[in-house]
Image (cartoon, rainbow, N blue to C red):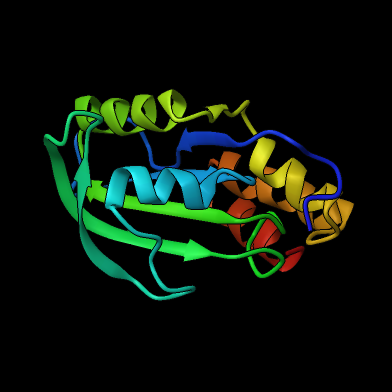
Length: 149
């Protein structure tokens, strides 16, 4: 679909700090290129694949789950690639830097949801509800935001 964007964006999709799993998400036309460079292949659409994540020189970065969502059947309506690795600030930064070195740029806060809105995957109320849910400080606020999704 990608009717409003020509570049590819990438961002760490999980909270910062140590954790069992961390996710780097990529959206845009370069997803397949980035997948081939990091994974040696593009995973089958909408299937989790356990693969090696490689650096430019062939050094193993980590092993994890990769999922490819072809457009228009993704959150943003664009091609989307998720790299699910072991959590941790350094590893997430390494994976993000690898994606950026392959032509993606750092996504601005809320940019994945903005693209979903621009590509008619969410209406304005739903896009605002996503922001409200992310920023919810109470259980009641979270429940209220979910009702608007």
